[in-house]
Image (cartoon, rainbow, N blue to C red; front, side, top):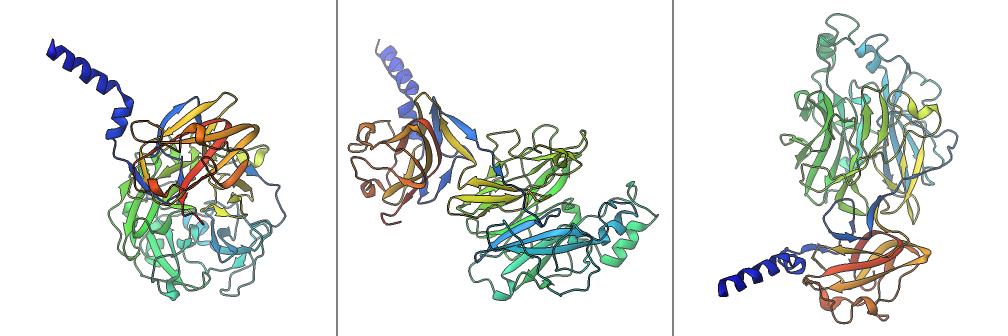
Length: 486
């Protein structure tokens, strides 16, 4: 009888989700902003769900520059745009693979109003023949085959980086094999190799983002490591204390993503294959980047390529964490569709520009090949959403530093949010129970929770807790614990 009682007690313990939660090591988020783009904090959704929000496309403005494999950098209140131009647009491989790509140049434009209007300064750095109408941009780069095919810069935020190397870039490609059908003449591949050297990604640095110098003659990532014939983005990761590059390769015939890291931008580690593709899915570019409001989260806006359906492309949304070999995809469907009209439904018509950038106090912008400009609220990729009926969202156990709970939220006029702080066994913490929480209504990028007009959580900092949100007609986009006067 005693043994039976012990067995029944054990079953009761195992069935108790609160006891199980108590045994989970709490996630220490410190004062970092956390979005719901992966499952790090998501404990239980009861009457709530995750919602993928679609960016809003703005009316197209005249003279908005565009080109393949573009990069936008937010730099001291100005947007810098780098993109590819072609001396002979539309002549794809008409005169052979090499002749086509030798005609590519890197162009430059800038905007001082969040990407609404752009100027193409005449930099006068290189003597380049007149670019055909439609390829607007400053003449920034001479023919540096094949680097100008996908020249991709970034601003190096590494502490102590020399001023002469504040801007860095990777660019280059891989020569197709000799038996590839795109060669115009025999031995074209060998001739290009003899003229330009081996393929792969080459490293460049600049003091002003306009005048570039080659950091090393040989490629820093050899051509046998990837395909490289689309955009390959690198950045300094403060979370990892090293440079990170996400680049393209062919994985058994499908376009996929690899990752490599470096301490000095010259010597790179053996690539790691990223787990991202759905079965049979091609991801043409990854556009992986640290999210500017939470750089410990890398977001990705890959181009999905329909290889068997006329090469139609659209944009997906993924996220990964520093050091991970996989992308998290709450949603497998398109983040940005090709849209109304024929322009988005052509061969390779949709490529998002690398980097989402903040363009107002409440919004960020994403730019598309073809001149599209999309806006989305800050942190607004994925929310915890509640509809008409009341629902709940419970986080996993976590620890924090700070004194106030800040969150990005939106409610309808009839909706509201309340939040309860619990211990890891699910019991409300005195003073922070649901009935103590002042109802939260409205729309705010940085709202704060209060309990009977008290927002001070300093007594709970460093202790394991869980957050229980009870909400209706509301979206929760991100959370963060901040100092009292943040």
